Image 1 (cartoon, rainbow over the protein chains, first blue to last red):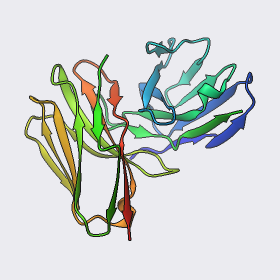
Image 2 (image 1 turned 90 degrees about the vertical axis):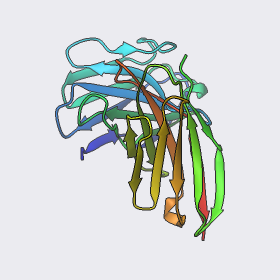
Image 3 (image 1 turned 180 degrees about the horizontal axis):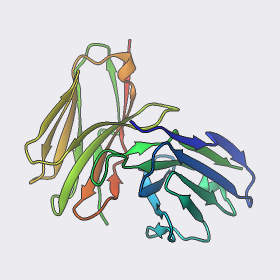
Image 4 (image 1 turned 135 degrees about the horizontal axis):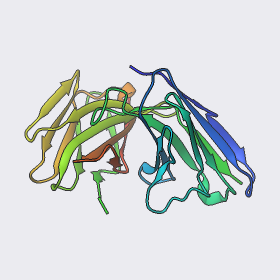
Length: 115
Length: 112
């Protein structure tokens, strides 16, 4: 199984600041996904991070708020910009290590609290 | 907008009880149904990926069934143990897409 390292594991941030979350995979993967789970809600896909091209964002999520980098096939970052308390969530990176349509492997998650 | 519903939202059982949860998903353009277990402070961990109508999968005391025509899946836990306490997520995979649509999960607490 894949090893996915995500950091930080948790943080408490002031509103108006930004936080960058890192995700490192121990093998090369084509797609990496970034999810958010707000309190009481389902895991929701923010965007798909593509190597060598811009990320693909889901409806309701924009690049200015959640810029994503994907410099190579093993690493990605998600930045939560200009944070407000509504951004308090668990953020997860995910990869389908075994290929299209197979089980997803997840990072340990970043629990973000914005005060 | 795709909707994946899970019930119940939470469940408290005694050690040794058997239990089951439901996941409802769109019956059109189905590709796969995933089940994950998510323990606090850990990564969600895949339990099953099911693709065929009528599929039944088993891992130890946990099993799952799939009905793609009516759009539901059941997850069963036989003889629950305290270590089964977690949130169980189902996720719907649509044909032609890598993306998964998750339900809100069922939070299971097994009391010793």
